[in-house]
Image 1 (cartoon, rainbow over the protein chains, first blue to last red):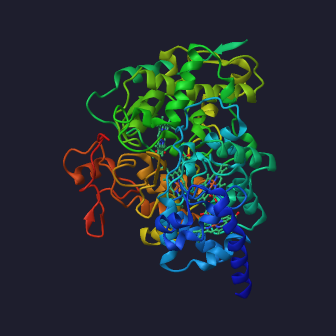
Image 2 (image 1 turned 60 degrees about the vertical axis):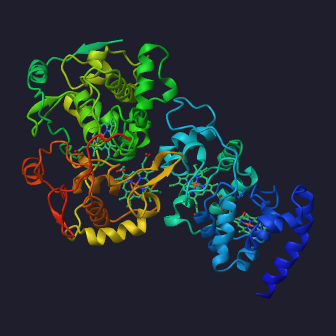
Length: 211
Length: 351
């Protein structure tokens, strides 16, 4: 427990520098007015509008409140492991989980052009092909089946469109290493485990480029 | 290329096709398929890649067939009355063995069907899935849509057979009127390398056709036990209310019951058929493998919920039940005080 608190204070003091550096247009005072108290500590890594800060924390805008609340609990239970985010999750308890999650879920995202299964018959880009057609010779369903058109996601199926490539890659690798768990019936683990390292790179780049 | 015209029994089949259509009776085209034994992987037909569909008019029909099959919602309100797409039940764009692949179906029609007592052409079989599985209004015989879906099915099957038997060259093109008939007819032309190895019956029972029969379970199926299986292994994708998950306006995860799913006349409403499908194909990507008992139980659970009316309904559930439901389904049965079919939603409703 001690360790957690130390880590949390360390992290927040390091990152309070980043707040002023990366979000110059929002003064700390304004932050206090628009961001609910429960979510204020989060903005140092995830941005005031949940837009994400490369290297510090992934984009949260565009994810549903239910999905984010579930993820916070997975960090708390150790099913998801990350030295920066786990201590933050421990600090968020009770109603505050939903308050913070609701806040980020209500933030705007850039609209992406929606593409459906069948829009293209022949797909050259290997990542786009996996996204829309899967590879059934490996029992690998299309990402589309669960993440939807242009991977905009809904409810417990997270949006991938416009997420940081580095983050997407780390997640797919985390499932392969067993450091991310807790998805129902291992449904996403089952997908991630079938991907090659090259495919993970390509998929991460592809979904990040959908903006 | 060497072609051989086959000539056994064809005339009879074709006469039946032309004379037996009953204009205003909705026949049952949803009879159980003969379940073909499950085979080792390497025996399944492997179709050519979509990139190999040729340029030109014929290729355009094949491509349109693919697009309609994976995004059938483009026909919503015209021919489709629910949120489903053909690909939801015929996985991998109708290409997956043991998920009722189109390449398995094409060589099995025209086929005599006992229940409507007539020979069904391939396009009539397609119409069946529009009327029942899609709760819609089937495109007319010879329509652009049925030609395209037939062309796509034919192309998957023929390209697969040609690859399997080392026949070089493009898939032979067929006219629209030939395409919609199906390939189980004596005037259907096959490259000799294929016809010398496989007769019509072998082609009509390609390994991987249909949904393989799930092994028998120890106990009789039970919707109560099925509800638990559903909560544990299906709900995360199909929703606690069975309505699936809409993403950006489409049912990426399809509904299993209710007004947006298949109707009471569809093959999937039979407990056995759905158990076969589920055991082989669900959960999607098979993150867990259900036991046969679980597959039977969960099938009975999803199929003892209300869904759109049987299109052959004439006003009395008991009549429809007597005439069309003498099989392992819940239509007309009482579940929690409610007679299933008595409160069914409409056929082919507008969005």
